[in-house]
Image (tube, rainbow, N blue to C red):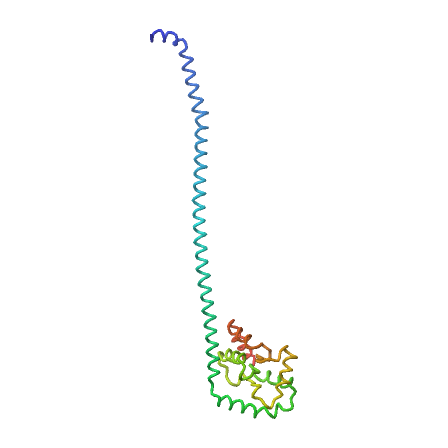
Length: 233
């Protein structure tokens, strides 16, 4: 059987051999490289997708960590701000309390002394002249009334600066029976748009009322403003 089969195949042996070699050559040089390139391309795409997923997860984790850090920073900053505001508020309250607790006798004696010294000089001055003369006489001048809570607020803020007596003056209008108080307050209305007190002046310039002075103290501007005026005098 095998002999018969070989007799039929033997004449075509060279053709079969050539065909096998040709098939091997085509597969090895044409088909195999393309299959290999296709496989490597597929593997590269999968690796790229994997890398992108890894990078995306890392970026997401970094963003979460950054947001958490920012929230912690914001919380600390907000807490520090609240603490500073609370400290400033307590400081103002303490100064106001100290002013309220001052000896009535001391206040009366100071007011009487000021009244006696200024009575003659102020008698013939117009309200405008009186205001101009006093705001230019000392670095810090406050037109006030002893019972006014806003006046106490302004004076408490200024008290934190520990000014010497010659550097400031508080003109208590409700104790100055020798002055035309209504006319002076009318002059305030003409100049500054309101009759109310306190009227606070630093270096001859109108600063505002109690809330304005408290705000300057809270913002850290009051001390530098007064120091600039004291330096120039």
